[in-house]
Structures are given as C-alpha cells and as structure tokens.
Image (cartoon, rainbow, N blue to C red; front, top):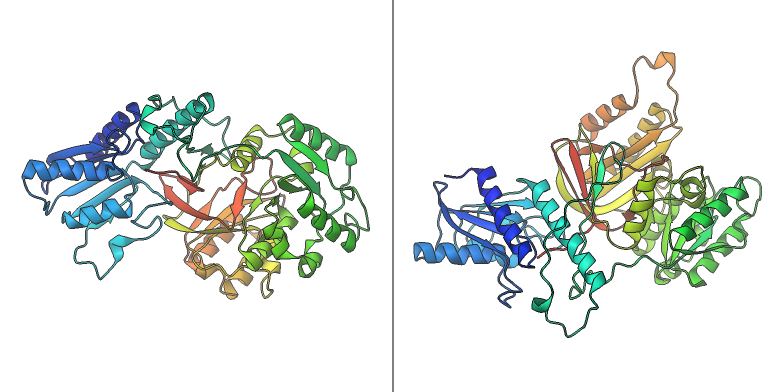
Length: 501
C-alpha cells in the first residue's frame, strides 16, 4: 500500500533508471484503487525507437497486461513530469481515477502547462488531477540529467545523421549549488544538450553587445569603460554608440541624438543591445520609435528602470520579447560585479536558464502560466492609458522600484488596480523595493502594509522576494515570454523554459 510520497519516490527510482540508460529521466507508477502496486515504467523512446514509449504509456501497458484488461478503472498513476496530450489521452482511455504528477511542464504539459485537457467538459471520462508532489526532486533530476547531457554534447561533435541510440549513456552529474543565494534564494537551470533537439539545438552565448544611452546621461565615463572591459572579459565583443556619453541637460544627448542611437543599434552587427543606465528620457521617445523595425531587427534589447518603457512599448506594439536585466554602468561598472547577476545574465542570453527559484516565505499558493511582463512600477503606472502598455490577460506581472516611499508604491498599485490591470493577472510577483525612508508619522505603515493591502484588495496571488530591482543581485527576465510560476514550502519557482520528454 503506497501513499503519494511512497508512490512518487518509486516513480523517481524509475526516472533514475531511465537516466542511467541515456533516456530523459521520467518515471511512472500505477497503483490500484487500494494503493497496491500494479506496474512501473520509465521513458524508453530511444531504446525502443518508439515515440510513444513515454514513461506513462510504458507503465499503463504493463498494468494492463498485469490485469489482462485494457481498462484500469479506479487505478491511480503517478509520474514525475506533467503528462503530455498523448499520455493523458491514454490515461483517459484506461479510465484512471487519479493522475498525480511532480514537476510542471510549460512546453507540452496537458494538465495546465500548455492546455488543460483534464478540464474539458465534453470528454467522456475525467480523472482527478493533482500536481506538485515532490516537484523539487522531480525537477532536480531532470536538471541534473540535462546538465550532464550538455557537457557530453560539447565534447562530442554532433552529426545530423547520428542515431540518438548511439550516443554515449550519461549518468546524471551531481547537483551543483548556485554560487550564492539570490536575494536569500537560489537559481537552478534545466538545459537540454541533446544535439537532436531542434528546439534547444544551440546554447551559445551571443557574441557581441552594443551599448546605447537612451535615457539619463552617464555621470562617470570611467565606469562605462570599466563595464566594457568586464563584458569583454566575459567573452563578449563590445562596442559603444558614438553618443553613449553625450550630455544634454540631464539626458544622454538630445531626443534626436538618442533616437538616432536606437536606429544605429538596429543596423550594427552585435546581436545584443544594452542600455548603459536608466534615469529618465525614454518616455519622450516612444511615439518616434519604429517598433516594427525594432522587432524585425532580431536584436535582443536589455535594460531596466527607465528601460521598462522601451520593453513594454515593444511588447504592446509588436509582441516581441526583450530582457529586463543588467545595465552596463550599474551592474558592470562598479567596484565589483556580482557573480550571481553575471551568471544569470550569461545563462539567460545563452538559453540555459530555465528555472529561477527563490525564497518567498509568505507567497500565496499559485501554479499558473502566462506572459511575463512588467518592470519598474513607476514606469508601468506611467503607461496606463497610453498605447504603450500591453493588454495582458492572465499574465505574470513583476514589479520593483527604488526610492519610492511605501505610500507612493501603494498609490501606483492603486492606479493599476483602478485601471483594471491587476485583476487580469494570474500572479503579481514583487521584486525589491529599496532606498526609501520611513517617517515617524507612518505609525508602522511600511512595505509589509502595502503587500497586505494588495492581497486583501486585488485577490490575485502575490509572490514576494523576486531577485530583481535596483539591487546588485538581479535576475535577467524575458519580458513578453510565456512562463510558469509556482510556489511551495516557502519557495517560488519561475519556469522560464523547460525541455521535456
């Protein structure tokens, strides 16, 4: 007789067997209605040269043979990864009563990851579906496996005609801890190194970065020089726009000069365009930027703070994805570069960062998928009522700010609430709100009060602790990409991308 933990532990053992054979580590277990073991299975797609030989199907076949009946009425299936549509269809045909999975799958999951077949009223059979059982252990096993596969792929030249079954069998590498906590959390990543995987075929760091100053003037040119040196030391070719150090009033040049720098960025050879700093100034430029040309350029734009206006306008006008992350001067031009910020930056650019995990002790329960969007709260609020604020339904909205008293933060959140923006989201993820000063007459009112008000008023799940903001330790986040967010046991997991079976 097995309970949830016992059954999933057995499924994890099956997944480890798959990994030892070079298969993607997914395992499954079928129990009868009383909790007795009927069958086990693990991925065998490569070994059997069978695209249907997913762990769940293998286990269902074995259970059906054990009972000498293709109907498994009342049975329960446990699997380490959210089932795909094929597997879920087989489970429905088998008339399972319960389906329990571990890690979510935002790429092919059919229990809510991509679609939710379990909630289709027209189907002639429905099963009770639960997710998140030992999700961390299930996800860790996958991450360790693909980390080892990536190392093997680097060492072995890939050939388009190479049979996957001829690939050397790789055992999972030991888990490598993050270099240090990200805002009291840690980051993990799940990477596919399979040369035959078209979706994740290459994980190479982009070769060059072009620096522009679309907002405030760079106060200390030496810091920009230092930032360029450090980026080169990281393996990038780096060039700065000719007006990157221009000064006009508080701005990095006139509006015309800053617009021209964006236009030049579209035509130059480097694939990544990074803002030197934030400040103020992009709001002036929004109506004059050719957003379709920006999207069509294929460049990856990255910045934060005032750059939020650029990222959200690009998303609103074209649907294109940009990055919220480091700026040259703030993150690479100071006394020291934060090692975790650098690692997250490089892993995101190379496509290696797949799950960002961080501590969120007071997080509301949530397991949702949606478009990741947001950035600096003041900039998001300033775009309300303009054509440059994306209309995101069911999104994951992340927010941060600096030097804003908690009542100002609440006032801007109130604006988004009154405008109907907050209620349309699946989750609100709060980053760091820093460098503000409370007054004696606040009487205990602080950011905790704001978060409490937000939860009571909006009734959308709120997750705190995101390592992002005007702080040294920050993640690099894809604005406009579809992601997953889940919380459990004081941790939050932002699923940026995930390769599955």
